[in-house]
Length: 158
Image (cartoon, rainbow, N blue to C red; front, side):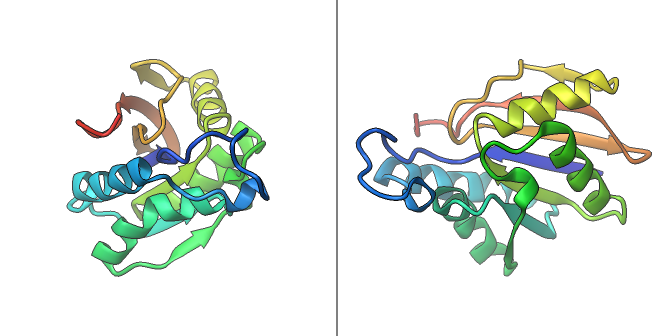
């Protein structure tokens, strides 16, 4: 079974944003990246969408949710500053019933999830750092994440 771990699309500079960072939206470039992510994953069999509660993460998944007719659920485990092992366990529990999950999170959380998976024996291809709008395509077998493949941002969106 598959699991998709997506870093949120471009949201502009944190330092240039004059408001609550949880409400910082995607930039125009990020909106294009979100549409491209939706096109890439439209036929991936995803039936469950989770996001950090941050607006930019939700906005990254909205085009995919609209295409698939799915709701997006907030996941505390994948909120910025979240612990990798906790987030990994939450995703594996959701995938245990055969569901295909896509999660949008942050540049600190997803490498921590990857590191936790590697410590548990998973193979990783492409490294643990992800650019914005990049993702891990993960393979889950026997309730464990066994392989992560880093996929760069959609072509023409960086």
